[in-house]
Length: 321
Image 1 (cartoon, one colour):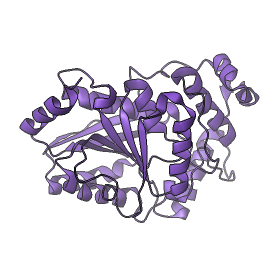
Image 2 (cartoon, helix red, strand yellow; image 1 turned 135 degrees about the vertical axis):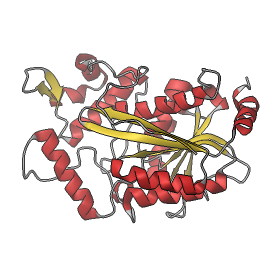
Image 3 (cartoon, rainbow, N blue to C red; image 1 turned 90 degrees about the vertical axis):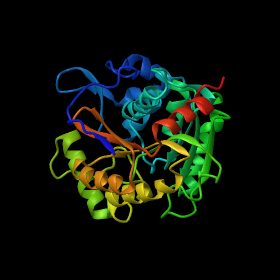
Image 4 (cartoon, rainbow, N blue to C red; image 1 turned 135 degrees about the horizontal axis):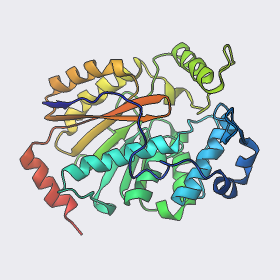
């Protein structure tokens, strides 16, 4: 197994990210007029959005999708996780770079590429961005039927997404790929934003830290600025256990997925993950740092395909069309 580690540093968004530059707030409020009520000067006298307010965050991200990505309809229940569009787009671009490395410096685009979003969520954000940026097809899985229904409504509401996303309910919350992928189904990559916390108490403590960072108010009453229901934030054993389960299960799909990947929010989980991947005999492992503002995270991706299998994959799938 080869392993690539990178130091976590603050840095700008991916070169292809549409939100590298400061937001055009005037244009955004034209796209979503309700956002204007939450735009006000910050401590530096510059117009900004109240990122500690869940309503403001959701409206901002709706405006980003409308103005920068051409997705006018992105609605889901307020209790569900509201993902920050720029950071999620960086994950998509990182996946594109992984594919490009294995395809002669070109990103394979269009329907010849299919990704699996593990935990697609009510917002369907990764398929939305992957389709807009690269025209890929997606399978979106989730253990929540309500989230599946919401994601499907987003697809139906936006013509650009129709026919590009298939949402599948994961009936067994302890499984990741089993019960979602068919026996003869190949996918080019998987991606996942796993639940962060092992308990409600841990989730609340994390929320208090987030509130302090965003508002500067010690002792503030926790409010999920990005919302989120139990299954999106909490699982038995937390992020570390979820990822170990994913690695173990990925062995059973080793020849039908080119790149497996997941976000890893806590750097302390990396060593255990590397040990699990070594035990699973992954042939190649990549660690890709991500970061926006004061938050840093990383993607870990792995493959079981040897060079000959990778070459066959390129010819049979990506050279089509």
